Image (cartoon, rainbow, N blue to C red; front, side, top):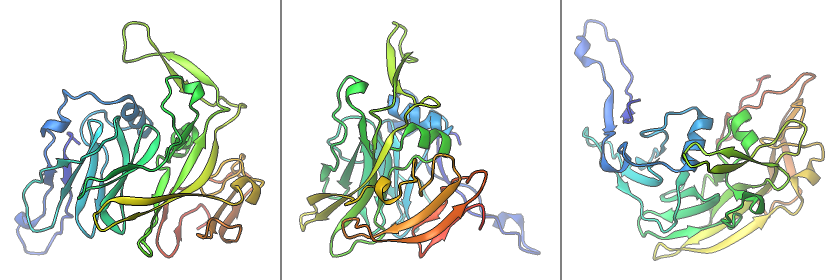
Length: 319
């Protein structure tokens, strides 16, 4: 929508009242503030993500909002910007750029549900987190080495595989714990290993000199990527610095707990005929788990991304 960020307020038709009482679109952020002008070039990571999401390639394409504090975070021109809508002003907001030490495009940002001052994001195929007040900026995962050859660098953290993005429309690969307990913040994330996926070379769409770009593309009948479920724990001290980072892994892999599984989103087999949503224990991902819903059909299950951290809300074909 013309590169701007708008807030839509519903229209109420009241009997015997003039139409001037109808609420209109309210522009929150203008599209021409300097940091997202059309003169700025976007990274290859942003362009590929927008192509898979079928989005426009200019302006504000996504944003995160923390409803309690009114904080808004959105990516633009390879950076992240924030502003706060406290509800007491009808004027436009003026975003500020988040201070970050990481070089590269910052995408897929998420605000911590229990602390809006913490914002996680993906940069160079790894998960970072920043404290927007103190400016503390920490790299949480070290899956990607940043090598020049794609064939030598198959791991990424917090980024779904190509199949998940293109075929299942899931672009999120990490999730905040909804509530912070005992001062410990947790992020559950998917580490993707594409070491068995073949690398293909294509002419670069960004160059006229014959340069080529490398992409991993799983062809039909060939190996797909492998996913591993991991968790990060960290704390924030009295100086608002991110400390005590701890990495956790499952004691038993998902393939061992669920041997029929070939692909996991909720948990889905290769033929898409069986889908299960399970609850794993938080204590170091022990093997004790609870079945929450099971679907088994003779044709195939359409995997739904509609799940929310509430008591339990799940949408499927059966209910």
